Length: 558
Image (cartoon, rainbow, N blue to C red; front, side):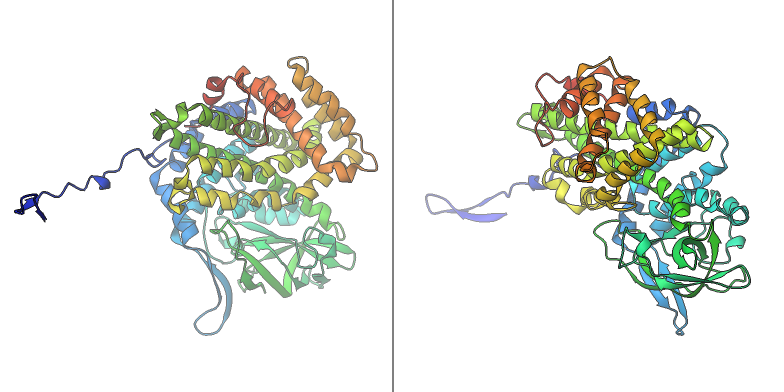
């Protein structure tokens, strides 16, 4: 109650109004308690690429990804970042990284779902597609923990260059059992693998590496050097590049040696990164570190590129998933938030923005799953798919990873100030967005890799052409874009200068081909109009009035 004075000078008491300002209205509920796999674009792609048998398991995993508990783990794993412990309490060098229990819970769920190396032990056609779809869902939940998962998946084809090493370690790398901590590899029920390529003086120019390797008389080598960016240092095994007498070579370096003793793997520091905070990235120093040669001496790049190719595919999958996660958050917010007398999702301009983001996301997801299908069929002996994968991975990684930051920023803006708040999860998606365009080859590296494929492996161009031309004769705008691109794909003296532009157009034409053949007419028409014919502005939300917005928005994730 509060006292007041009336007009005639008498005092009285007025009732204080109830605290109605504390009633929460017009806010979206948390995006939890749903099946993240209930997504027509994802499910159609999985079935189209040969993994329809996995749909029930994918829905089970999707319910886990959409659960409140899993989302809490994701938030905790990033808030409580990994901590480096170089020595124990007695002064012994241990070089270990400690993680929050939420990180281990995420790792256990992803490895158990077969997202690490399990696909290599699965003989069913489509196994790598099934794994790719699960990887995308897990990325939508929390991408940082998937770095060690991805490298474990990717190490298997590289390790097969040394059959004896593969015989020993592959059964454990393809396991669905996650066990944290370091101990003798052969005694663990499952292993994780990593990669050590870059050094501070060279970065992507790995041939400038200065780490050295000297052969011993017992079949091992001794490594000495300092790696600049080696993620997941608590993994069990690493493929490492080092200069041997015969040239740059690839070596298997375990954290713990077969006799149970610690290999020298001195973690100098953890990187203080923009995003990817749940994942530990380190600078390890080798000093008389024991390794085993993988593949042929002097052919280290050729050996480890088998691993890089698969991690590049995961970068593309991850960026497609990160874009889709941001779109899902924006769509969820727009479905529940109202302004100016209508829900946001019914406001014309917001519909334009969401439809434009949906086109970007569907094109990225469809391309990512098509490449996962190509990888699966290539592993089963399809040379045409292997040739297609060689060129299409380069152009796909370039473009899809480049588009993620812009798409996530636009999706964040759909939430307004709510999206700028850490509690929404959108800032974490935004900080993560540039990562995949840097890892495993930045934009320049992948664009130039496209040129190498065109000049050194002409079969890759033939395979790309066959894929694209499967859609000709259906849409005049697509046909015109393909005719223009054919001329640009001719490698000339100025090709390096034009590489980014050509990679962009090659990716868009490939996406157009896939959508013309496989997406609903509303999606294919809007994509060809906006991305191939240029009927849009430079920002998202500038689709033309003739767009079938309702048809495009039907494809939004739940």
